[in-house]
Image (cartoon, rainbow, N blue to C red; front, side, top):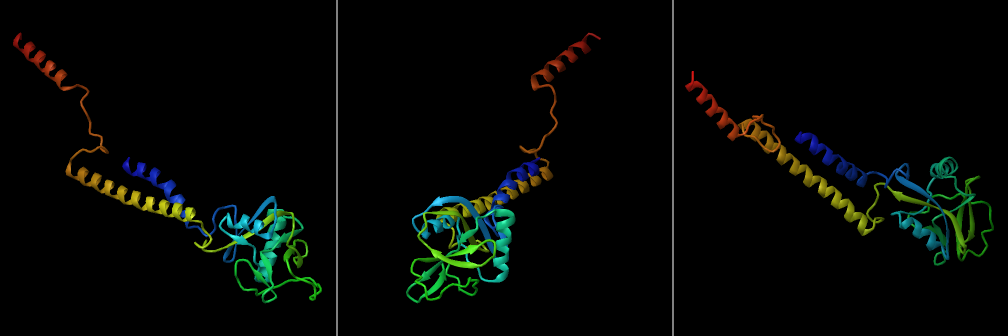
Length: 232
C-alpha cells in the first residue's frame, strides 16, 4: 500500500523532471540533428525584425539559422508537410554594415548559403533574408515590413541555459529538487515501515486484525458467562 501510494505521488513529478531535461522544450517542437525547431504560425504586426525575433526569444529560442543543405531541405520538407508555412519565411539574418556581410542573429558562423542570383552591387542597408519555401533558395528583402506571417525559431540541443529565462531555470530546478527530496523521504518511510514490520510492531501502514468487540463488551460477556456457570 505504501509503495503504491509513493509511486502515484512520484510519477507526475518524475514526468515533469524528465520534461525539464528533455532534448526539446516540448512535443510541439521538431528535432533535427542537434537542434529543435518550431514554427509560430501567428501573423503579427511588426515595426522591425526585432519584433519577429522576440517571438522566438519568448519561447527560449532564436530566429532560424541554416548551416548546410540537409538542414535547408529538412526545413522545406517540414514546412510543407507539418507547419504549412507561407511562400517566404524570414531568416534570422541581418546585414552588418560594419564589415559588409550577412550574419546570423544567434551568432553562429555563416557556413552555408543558398542565394538566388541577385545584383551584388545593390544597397544592402536594412536588408534581411527570406527562404523561398518552394525552391529552397534564399533571397534578399527589405527588413521594414508591417507584418510577418509566421516565425521560424531554432534552439540548440541541449536546450541551452543562455536561451532560458530566469523563471524557466527556477521552475526546472524546483521540479528536480522536489523530486529528489520526495524520493529520499519515500525511501526513508519505506525503510522504517519494513523495519517495524520485521520487528512485529504495527504502524500506520500496517493493518492488524481487530476484534469486533471493544473492551467493555468483552468484560460484560465474561461476567455473563461466569454468572451462568454459577447456576449450573
